[in-house]
Length: 226
Image: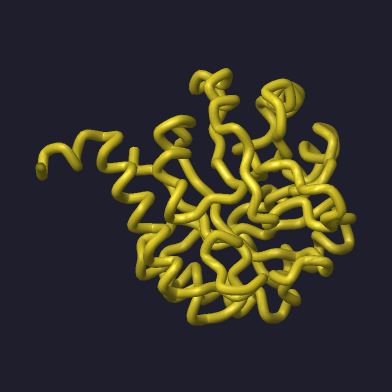
């Protein structure tokens, strides 16, 4: 199966269109007011509709949001996925999944290999995991900080979990990240920005091409062209 690409923190029609034209699989929209990528429900609804019409799955990214907030997002944006990027418990994750009838992606902050042990209670509840780096000291953002973790930690998963790799990925390191982790999907946000919250269309091009090149090597397609 072709490796999946999620471009997160989209906030303009131009960025949505570019993600679609590049063949990305998922478009993420951030609902967290401390983030420079935060979008209001009305804006996100327009962008998500545009994304869906161009073949992208839409993901609403929230952080420890209450039912009222989620109700508003789901009603306005009609996302295909909910991403829980806070400290949501397995019980809360199961409740959110049941309440909205949507697949849930649960994010985890990783620094040490032992951090991956925290996914065990979520197995069979979350439809997919997202592994991001732990935020640097003093950051108010749970993700989008442009920092990475040791990708070798993911070897302990041994194919036992559906997940996406995130955290500090750029065109320059995503090939190495995929070679080491063997991740089935990648998520990028700050790695394709010229300033916090501002997607650079050229950087988006370069990142997706780097992912495709790495995937071709992994599947043997690249070697056939040598």
